[in-house]
Amino acid sequence: MKQLFNIKRLFYAGMVLTFIFPTLAVMAQEDLPPAGKPLALEECIAIALKYHPSLGAGQATLEAQRAKVEQALAAYYPQIDFKTTYSTATANYSSARSPANSWNFNNFLSTGPSLNQLIYDFGRTTNSVKINRENAVASEQDLQTARQNITLNVRQTYYGALQSLALIKVAEETLTQNQQRLTQAQGFFKAGTRSKIDVTKAEIDLANVQLALIRAKNSYLVARANLNNAMGLQEGLRFALVEAVDFNPTEVPLEKILQSAFTRRPEILQLKAKQRSQEAAVELFRTGYYPTISGNLSNTWRTDEVPNDMAWDWSVGAALTVPIFSGFSTQNQIAEASAQLRSLTAQEESLRQIIRLEAEQAYLNLHEALERIAVTRKSIDQAQENYNLASGRYQVGAGQTLEINDAEVLLANARANHINALYDYKTAQARIEKAMGQTGSEISPQGKEK
Image (cartoon, rainbow, N blue to C red; front, side, top):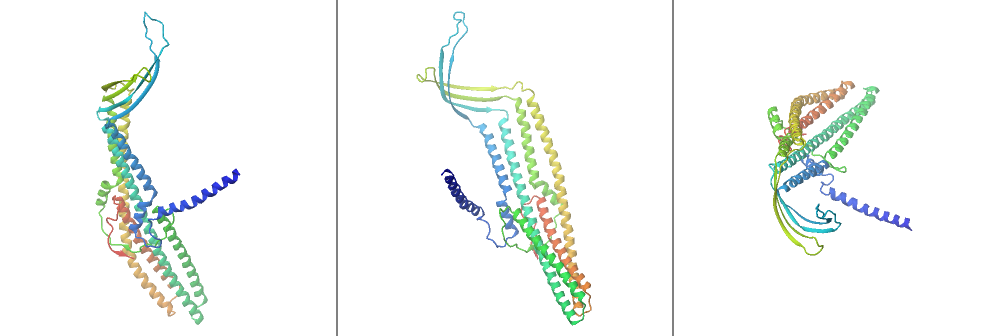
């Protein structure tokens, strides 16, 4: 019976979980766009900034740090306690007239509120509050860094998916060309104007293009999976991509990129906040040499005849605490905090070098992509003209199979090179914006190229 009861419990628990977990999943995903709705880049970024789990962790860290600020501020407020104590003890005193000890115990009961108020501590509380406030600023900038990294990752993966999609179209166009050539070769062979080798060569070329198309489609699926992951989605979201790409090159001087990077990058601002926090820590430890002044007030009811005959007493006072010797801990705490401050300063210089290199690389890659775009545009026109000539010659029986095959390869490569250059430009542009500490497409040009 007991086993049957346990089986029933497990069955009902499983039924409950079966209904609850899908409901929670639906609730978590209810704000997502409907499947199949085309999503622009900005919409994908908005989804990522809403659902990516790393941002939830960063937000929780920030909230915890803000709570520490409030904890530090608590030292400014009075501390009120209500305390009750009970004790029983002997009361023996050394006396020549009565040298014997007595084993009579006396009861003591006291109860009542007490108030303690810090009056002045020479900057201990002030610096403690400043430390935690600057740490909160550092946590906020760390969260901003995570947002920018997620934004960059979404932009890169979105462009990667569009690039793969464009390469699929190139492969499909090349497949159509090869199918047409195979049909022509078969017709020529039947008419007796071409040999069987032309048909065989066209079939081999068609098979190779089909393999290339399979690889291109798989690359697109992988790119879509990467995009879903970059958006922080718990499950694959099927949606179309807006294929229009803004392209209208805008010159951004390297000096402006670096100036914006050193001023706006959250990593720099985070280190600045940590430095200010560490400066406050140095001052906090320095206050270990100084006294503290506090006041107290209490109202106590007490008796030695439990539980009767309670009497009350008021107590008002002040305390001055002067540190005399702390075993050199204060000066070593100051030395440690000062060394950590120097370390943060060195980290900032190292970070500036990393940011400079990142900005210069993105700047150079952007200009390289621009030059490649200009060249590949011309090469497409030239390759298209070459293909038209080769195709025309082949149709009238004057051209060779190798000639039109080379023309097809050159045209496909020219189109692919142009697509790669275009999306390399967009990726470099995204990296420049990230290097400048920008969160949106603030330097994204207006204009479209498909």
